[in-house]
Length: 162
Image 1: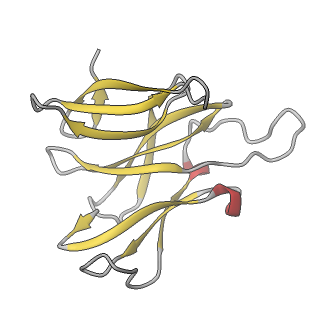
Image 2 (image 1 turned 90 degrees about the vertical axis):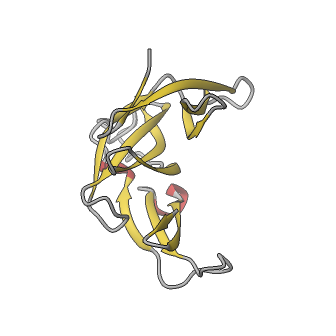
Image 3 (image 1 turned 30 degrees about the horizontal axis):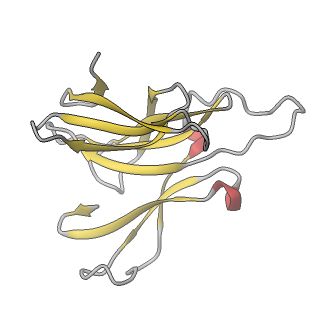
């Protein structure tokens, strides 16, 4: 991701290390050869309000997964992030927003964009210029397939077109 001419790497800090995974960023050198500085925190998985279950059936704390962040700036300049996690045992593709349009802003969690055991989404434009989302669905190593959705940029967010 590039902001104000400066390249950044945005990544998921593994839940396996933290139990409550985070999304972080680090400034890169201009030639992208190495990090230039210390990572900074954007948000943690448990910030998402749709993660209602805080314990499993044995009343042990759950882990909170952050995975597959991708940044997208809407046509009105809103900086949003697609990211994946688990909700009630199924993978979901969710949205978060920067309150000031910058990586350094406060990241507010929104709802789930695509449920149904889906994740690792990426946005792209097809040959006709339509905004598309590709992700895997379901999240099962034996059955996982790529699924395409046409997406609308509403200016303040994105939504799946029906």
